[in-house]
Each structure stands twice: as structure tokens, then as C-alpha cells.
Length: 498
Image 1 (spheres, one colour):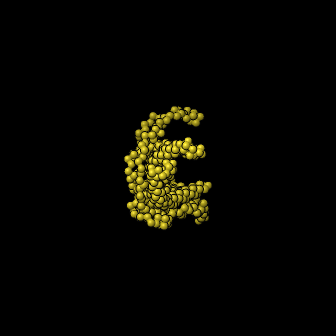
Image 2 (image 1 turned 90 degrees about the horizontal axis):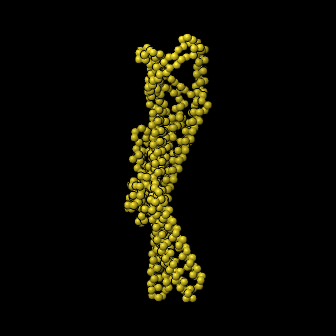
Image 3 (image 1 turned 135 degrees about the vertical axis):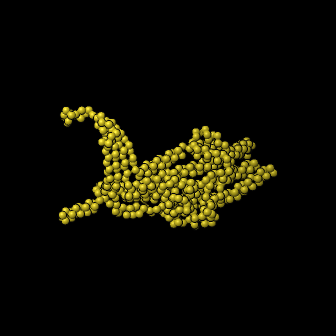
């Protein structure tokens, strides 16, 4: 007896020793702490305020009703939003499937079948018979290790990420419409300046032709005038093409045909929005940029995937039961003698699986590392994007101030040239040459002001574009601590290593 017990214990020990194990497998990725990313020196000299975040309808601050209507139209009709919305609904449906897998299953069925067994098997007793069958089944797999819940939380996290990415797509669309609108306004300004330059070149060429006929200039000056006229005509054609391109870009963003762009009136000049630096930018940025919130959701989801994969190495329990009625031939189905039932609890433990479970867990670890790397990359890129936009904004302000001085000087020179011409001291050709310098200065100023407004929109997008995480709250169920808002934990959690 003792020998049999020893043999059984030895066999059990060998079996357990050979069971599939998750030992040695763990993810290597570590989410960055936002507080470790320094930005104080890069943002030195900027005003700090905890309220320095764009409003949800930030575009109304540009005070252009046509732009407001265009953004509303784009948000209602852009096909790209239908794509991200469909992806979000697909992810939500997958979360529902994962949640259903945790619940008990109850089924009801019935069937009627007729059959005649072969006479070689039953001889003369073989005859056609009808079997009537009805049953009620119950199936449930308890979740003692939390693996099913972790799997559901992982899919739910992916669904939440898809929801946030749908918000991010709307923010990107609104900023793209605003930037295309700014480009349309700049194209119109360039058109005006190109038209003015063409008129100047034609007047200069006409005066040069008069001087050639009078013997004061040669054919060389006349050909130079012809070249200036041709160049001005080419620049005017470029400006017209830029207007068409901006209208087409807006038509695409609105989800309409090219004729829609033709109905867009010339934009009025827009003033850039002055945005202050938010206090504690690196940490606060996590709650105000949709792409960062989505990236954190995906890290959390990948961590829950690891937890679910680890439970597959543990014993699995399943409960099943069935009760029903079975009657053959003409016997009535609804009688006590037709009743049958069965109860089948089961326990399983993986022992040898050819490395499938370890390979699956290693894949989940790698997916977690990928999610962390993408989160870290997004965080670093977001912070540097904001800092770079602020630096560019400051530089553009200096450039505009310097160009304004140049433009004022060009205006003064043009006024003096006109006065000299009227006084008979200078020639009109000299005045037109000064006029050309003024047009060049106006072109540079127009480009700088368009860049200022465009950069203002880019900065709004870099600061989250009006995203508010509290509006994306989960409706019950799993909600990772790091994704509940800007006051929550600064980084996603890291799965525990076994």
C-alpha cells in the first residue's frame, strides 16, 4: 500500500513538474513619467495659467461665421469620420462579445427525427421509429483566477481607445478645415498682390517702350520689361491655381464635390489667437490630448491581455448541466419516464502543449512593449510639438515686427518716389521700381501673417484641440486609473511580473 502511494505521489510530482509554466516571461517596456520630461527652459518667459486650454469650439474665437459653418459642415459630412465611428462601434461590439463569454449560458432546444436501423444489425426488430427530443442546457465557466474578466477589460480598453480616437479624428478635421481656410485667404491675398505686380510691370514696360521710341533706352531694357510682364503673368496664374487648390482641399474635407468649393466666399483676414502656456504642461497634457489618452488606454488594455494570458497556465473549472425529455415512436414526450438529466463539472490543467501558452504570453508581452513604446513616442512628440509651436510663435512675432518696419519703410519710399515724380525731380519708372519693392514687402508680410494664423491653429491642435476627457467617461465596467482625466495618475500601470 505504501509503495502504491509513493508511486502515485511520484507520478503526480512528475506531472506537475511538466506542467506548462509562465516563468521567466515578462514585458520590458516602462511608460515614461511625464514629470521626467523637462520643458521649463524651453517655455521660459511664457505666462503660465492652469486654464490655458483651447475651448471645445475654439474656432469661434477666430470670429468668422463662414469658417464656423464650414467646420460644422465637415463634422457632419466628412466620410473619414464614418470610418473611425465604424471602427469604434466594431470595438464596442467586440467588448460585448468578451463580456458575454463571462456569463452563464442557458439554452433551449427540441428536435424530431425518424430513422430505420439496418436489418443486419437488429434483424426482424429493425423498423422505422421516430425520436422526439427536448432539452434545457446550462453552461458556465467560473472565473477563479480573473482571466475572463481581464480578457473583457482588455477588449473594453481597446474599445475606449477607439472612442477617443474618433474624437481625435474630429479634432484633426476641424483644425485641417481651419488651416485650409487660412490657405484660401492667403491665396486670395497673393492673387491681389500678383495682380498689382502685373499692372506695375505693364506700366513700366509701356514707359520703357516710349523711352525706346524716343531713343532714351535700348531694346535691352524693353526685353527686360517684357520678361517682367511675363513673370508677373506667371505669378498671377500661380495665385489662381492656389485658390483652386485651397477650394478643392476644403471640398474634400467637407465631404462634397469640387463645385462646393466654388461657393466658398473669399475669407476675411483672421487674427491669430494668443495662447498662454498651461501650468505643469507635461502632466496636464496627458488629459487634454486625445491621442495620448487613447495611447494610455491601449497600454492598459495590453496589460490586461497579459493578465488573461497568465491565467491560461492555471487549472480551469467548468460547470455544465442538461435536463430534457426523450421519447421514441408513439410514446408521449410529456411524461415522467421520458425525463433525463445530467450534471458535468470538469477540471482541466495544461501540462504539455508544445509551447503554445508560452508563445501566446510572449506575444502579449511584446504587444504591451509595443503599446508602451507608442505611448512614450506620442508623449515625447506631443510635448516637443507644443514647445516647438510656442518657439515658432515667438519667432514669427519677431519676424512680423521686423517686416512691419520694412513695410513701413517701403511705404515711405513709395510716397517719396511719387512726390519726386509729381515735382518733376524723378521719373515714373523710378517710382514704379520703388513700387515693386513695396509689393515684395507686402507679399512677405502676407506670408508671415498667414503663417501666424496657421501656427495658432497648429498650437490649438497640439494642446488637444478642446478635448475634454470627462466627456468620454466609461459607462460602468473597467476604467484604468491613468485614463480618467488630467488629475489622475501620470502614467499607465505596468503588469506585475511572475
